[in-house]
Length: 616
Picture 1 (cartoon, rainbow, N blue to C red):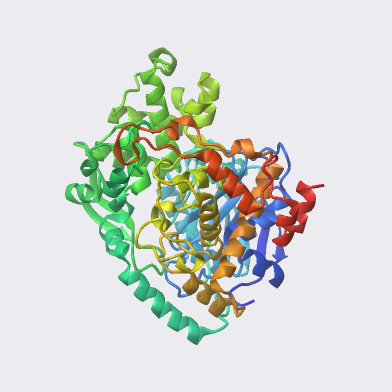
Picture 2: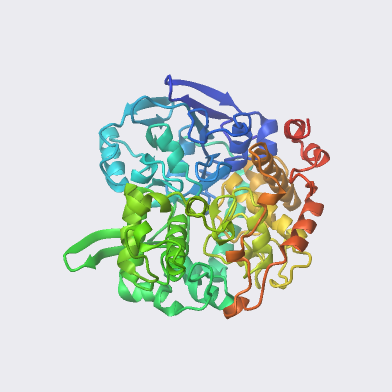
């Protein structure tokens, strides 16, 4: 198949050995690339009760067939492994230049196992791999300085994917940062790197794969650019980044506030225009992206004595997590909290949810001033920043917050229904009550409470044309009927983004994506084939989670994010989880008793190895 090099580089940090893993055309056709192909490679490493921080747990950096092509919005890479935070399947994606340079090395991805005796970084260029000492980088600089030092040492055009203090300290939701402030944010992949004494993966290369039908692809790219240009959200992303959604999210009840107990708040204090009014802002784009949704704030002055020349502006999720979720409407504090998390490699979503949980427990007098060593009151901007620093440095109450809400509840003896997570992953800033199908997607999704694996806020909305050819059409978001079948389709469709790899914000319709896949690979694919790929991917990751102990009981939305509120766009609405789960299980071919995909379903999807393991 065109569009691939047909090989991964495997590196064992324990002994420094390397080997090339050949990827057959049959596997490329079944698993496409990105996170799905990574799941196939990781599958055989997975064992019940395995320690995610053990040297045997691999971390995979994977590109896809679209990466490195001229298709717009495809500079994405998937980073996968068993999550240190959840103990289950974990994946995150990142953008910038790193994905293109990763594939430019001449590999479709890199699989890393083992543990180095001392801190190291890996440098992979075209036909070359080096493991270099990183003891001078460990425990000292923030990720921006780390990237700059490595670039100076190598002296070539490279992209650096590295961890900061959070990853070194193996914080459950530490992330991986590249190309300055681009983040692979969720599931704690930074802790996985830290457990291997791996400070950074550095890539450099300009190799290109062959395209099957370049003339046809050129026409498709022209169509794609016209589609992006004419999309209603394109200008909004350019002007305000993802935070353009804040006003609408609040009106829909999709933006949670006061730790998922409110949905009404002064959105105009923290929406996109408020940031543009207060700061001198610019934007950035990943390689080949005509939108540029990333924000840059220039000459940021958090206090009278400090000016930072440039910081990364917070996205919608970060503004929501450090803003209304904590009842904080101080823009400078939100920007600074985002900067601290980026600088030291920590997921802003999980960090914000953990702090909001602490505020919630403090208000209920469960987490007292004596236990916390400090007051933790709603909306206290200074406290938010103090807690972020304490989490990063593993000091005092920050050490507990850095474990996430599931472990916080366990250690504090709190009712687990108060902990806002699914399968250990904290909820993002899309409230489960806003879209019935979104609640179901959170419950059954492969990595827990993930808004990207079931993007109802964009796919189940008026004007959406992305999934029309797949039968994904607008429906009453508050009606649970037939949401099981629709959610299955949306989950299957969303799986393809991290496989191709394609930005989740791409407005390309399914038939155009299928055309691009045909033009790149030379194998004929139709729009409905994308759902088959997605279904195989979802079931493969579910099988991994089943091997790790997941059952139907884990497909659960806790009361704190499910019980109806008395205000806002979701007033009186509670997701009917029982109805939707039963329908989803029925249409998906999952066994209601065990939570496993049925043997015949796995066999139909050509996952015979998983069928043998789960139904021995």
